[in-house]
Length: 408
Image (cartoon, rainbow, N blue to C red; front, side):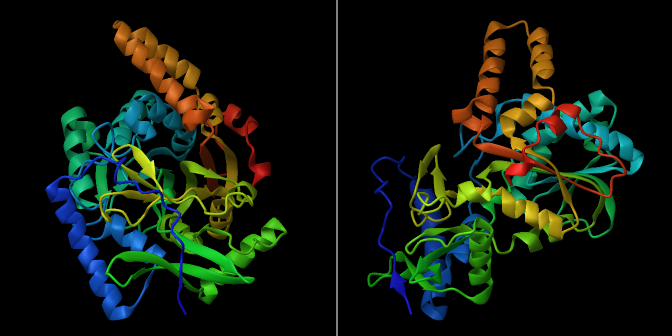
């Protein structure tokens, strides 16, 4: 049974930059693959559609050759703003790396443009706690090439010698730090809806003219169980017509990427909410967004392969997934509080003191505003530290004091 979803998307073509002929042809290739698959096998779950839009070999948003990050791309992440963010992250995890000694590794999930790795390696070298290896788990061959070129151009040979790229998570037990900035929001999200008290799952199908459309089908047992778990934890049923996202695969994903991390920390920074805020009654169409050339819009079917598709993170679900994998929440707090606890004031003052150019100092101040202001990244982004196997928790006291884990 299929139930078409009334479109809530605002017509975006008049407000979005026009794609080039090559970009449109690129998107049309992916669109044709979707058409062929749907004709052959029927509607596909939205999560599968999102996964292919982002990661289809040679055609997905992250696996094709367009610039994604920074002013020339579609969005700006914290590491793209400058080095203050990475220096604070290293301040937070450096005591743990120091306590683990020469065998500790640092694993970054999804290296982006390489900006974070460049700044982090400089900060680690400056702190005297270089890891045995700086590992980057990067599925995109294009991004991996860009990261390698950037690091080779901007870091000395001895630092580059510690960097290695992985195709899959470490298979052998290891110790150290796992870091992921804006990774979980790009995991393929399952979209669900409640109809007459039953759980339905959003799919992508074709209309009578061969265009993509979103439809609902009865959810399978895994999706239905994930939604019922949310309702039990909230202590209330979600209203009929309520539509949102869930990541039923999140516990398996955390186990896959961190199952062999026997001793150390995981640090996730992303935009999102605790569960009771994620599933507010008024947030009844979820958090799914598309990003195209620095413009956010709400039509995930527009130009597949050219848009970054994201959904906010349920940090309560992340804590549950970490617990299932054997990790305990060490600290949870908004990004602004995390950066303050990780020494942003000192990092900023040192950077200002080293600059002689007024424009550079102004840029540093602007960087702090983007990272800290509530309407920018300061409150929209959250940080979660999870620990496993550590005899003592080596975190800055300010981070522990600012913990808001009780909100989870």
